[in-house]
Length: 136
Image (cartoon, rainbow, N blue to C red; front, top):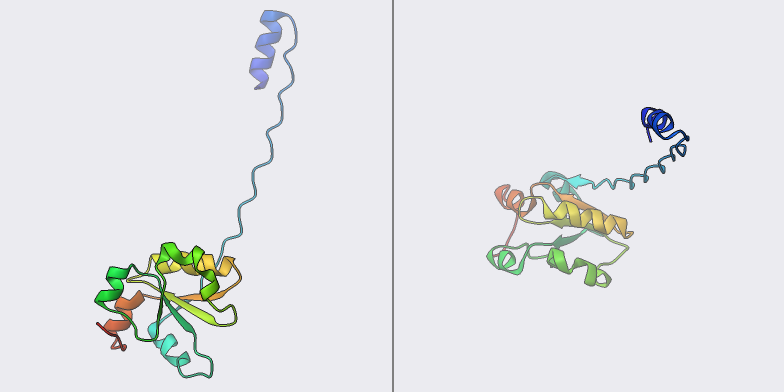
């Protein structure tokens, strides 16, 4: 209660109002998750190492049927929480979608659950545009 209201009550009602209760402390902000993002050029550089990253396509089935990467594991975004066991925790996972909205959320979710995840900047559209291999 404000000081002014406290004084008005005291003046009109003759008795002091209860002292104002302190506000509870604000809830702490959750830790922000940083999602590393790889460019197509950076991804091409790591494709030939001994243990290349796992490619995770999180687009919908109709998008997968239109165009997809031959080596990618396809798990639609909404199925990820139910299919985490299919993803190896020892591999780096590169998450991608069509252009770049869904992959960021999924990669953040995976990082939050202990996976080593990053995202492909520009998604499959950027991969195809830059001459990357794909299937229809």
